Length: 320
Image (tube, rainbow, N blue to C red; front, side):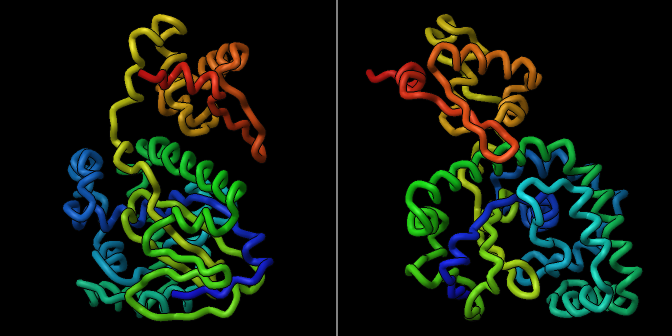
C-alpha cells in the first residue's frame, strides 16, 4: 500500500484510538489465541461468557485472517471516541455499503454472510446488537486498561512527531512502514497506490488486539493506518511496578509508583486507572510531585499531561 502524501497531508497527521476497532479485532484473538498469546489472561477470563452471546454472524463476518468489513471499524472521528458513538456509526451504515463490503469477505461460514447480504439493513441491526452484547459481557470492564496503554502510545508518538517530524515518527512506527519523504509505504499482501489523501491527512490508530500487524483504510473512508501499540506485553500485568523500598520510604509508596509510571507522560485519569486510585488522590500526589520539582504538567488539548523532570528521572532511576 503506497500513499503519496502532499505537504498538507503531512501537516494534518493526527492520532486517535478506537474501542470499536479493539472490540472487533479481539474476535480474531478469541478464534486464534496462539497468534496473540500476550492476551491469554483476557481470553481465559471471557471465554466462559461467550456461550449465550450469539456471535456466529460476527464470526462469519470477521474471519481469522484476511479482509473484514470496514463498516465494522469506521475510522475514529475524534481523538477519544467512546463506544456508544462508534456503535451508532455502525448502525448508520448504508445497507448497500454493508452488503458490498460483506461480499468481499472470505468467510468460513458463507451461508451466514449470504443471509446478511440478503437483507443488509436487518443484518446491520443484528450485528450492532451483537457488538453491544459482546462489549458489555467481555470488553467494557477491560477497556480502561486497554485505553491507558493506547493513550500512552499516542502521547509518545505525538512527541516524536513534534520533535523529529514525519521521518522520525514513521521510522519508529513499525518495520512494515517506511517513509521516503513523499511516499508512505505499508507492506501488505496486496498492492495499491493512492495519489494523495484527498486533503484530509492521515489518521494513525494504535491497536493492542490487532497487534503485531498493521492495517489500512482508504477512500471512501478517512485514510487510516492502524499500527501495533508499543508495550503490549505490559497490558495484563496486575499493577504498576513495585516502588523501590528506599524511594517509597522517602516520598511514600503511591507517589513513588506514580513517579515511576511517569517514565511515559500520562494524564491524571490514565494514572488513576493504572494505580487503582481515585483521580482526586492521583491529583493530590501529582501536586506534591510538582511542588517538589519532580514532575511537570503541560496542557494538550483538553487534558493536562504529566511527565518527570530531570530531577524526577534522577530520583526514580538512580545510577549505580
